[in-house]
Length: 138
Image 1 (spheres, one colour):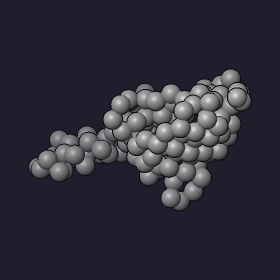
Image 2 (cartoon, helix red, strand yellow):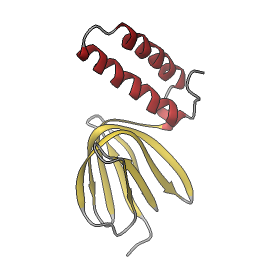
Image 3 (cartoon, one colour):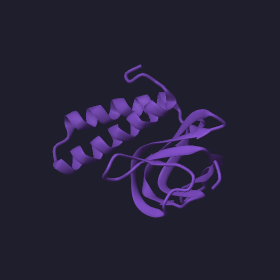
Image 4 (cartoon, rainbow, N blue to C red):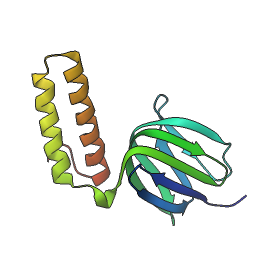
């Protein structure tokens, strides 16, 4: 058994991230976060919106994921996300502006569908702000 696992994060548009990491966690669609170490039992699961945490060279890092699937194997994890960004790709000012717009959409929502769409936009902006290390509302 090796002491690292290859983590690849892909979207339909590009490869977002690829590196050997010592551990990782990703958000599942239904059951919170799932932790993976080298030698993990194979599985495929739906992922939710949130942060993928990973340790590379003894340093903790993260990136965003929004929906998709994860395929886990003993030496390789592939995350196929609808959308994903590294911390460097996130514009915190833009994410804050999206948060403010989403709050207004929630306040002004007239239907359950409008409310659901606005809440999804709010959640996405909050994930991005968390990844960027920006306090909410600043």
